Length: 78
Image 1 (cartoon, rainbow, N blue to C red):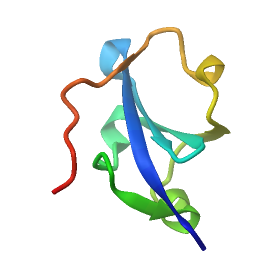
Image 2 (cartoon, rainbow, N blue to C red):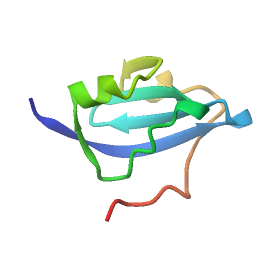
Image 3 (cartoon, rainbow, N blue to C red):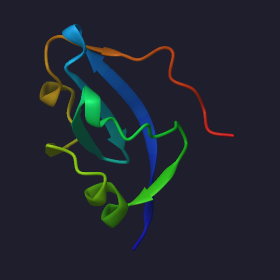
């Protein structure tokens, strides 16, 4: 199974959720369940599913909540 790169991370206002783009999908997590993926980290789809997101969708900016903003403090993996 091919691995996909973690590309982007968004936060939502009120610190309710974090959202990651992994390849061509987006994974939604409650803030207290953030798996702390690192930018550039690679995951296969089994690993992504095991991280227990509450929602998974094909990447489309229209799928992001209106209050989502890019996490500028998010760092690259070593």
